[in-house]
Image 1 (cartoon, helix red, strand yellow):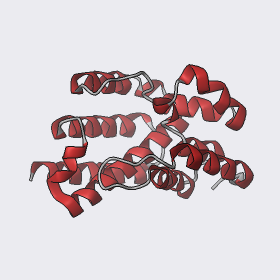
Image 2: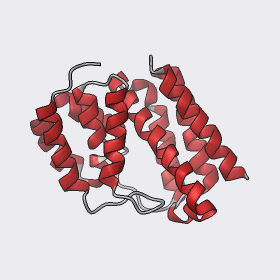
Image 3: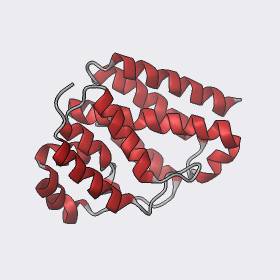
Image 4: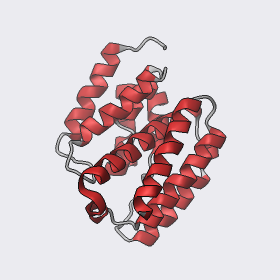
Length: 195
């Protein structure tokens, strides 16, 4: 594992906490900051570098903030590498809540996977692996009520994760253990959705 710059990482933890402290993830109410910390920990535990670990803490920042107004802030605080990872991880164009638009944006996002950096793909993998893990955990606790918190159909959610899993297996080099784990989680999610 590369040496983690703890000073810079602590700065990112504080920034992430301050930005996300009043936000909660879908499913069973759980602080979103804790979710992001878990994703970042996956990065660190799997030999990620400081920039990747920091990007994991703020990887969807541009989905919640205007990229044009906030890009200089991220570059100034954490550098161009972190900015580029966050930008590539984000589906940052404004969406309204219609499922058809969500589906179209996800299709466009998936079409760009092969153009993303290896660092960005690694952060995406850790994010989606933890996301599916949370869905499975929530489903085990509250069953099909979980899907009431999602605007998308379960078929669309499953399609997205299955397609993303295939693309990550194809385009992300290394990280075989994580990619295999993601595949197992997607398979388990499919079983829970269909039964």
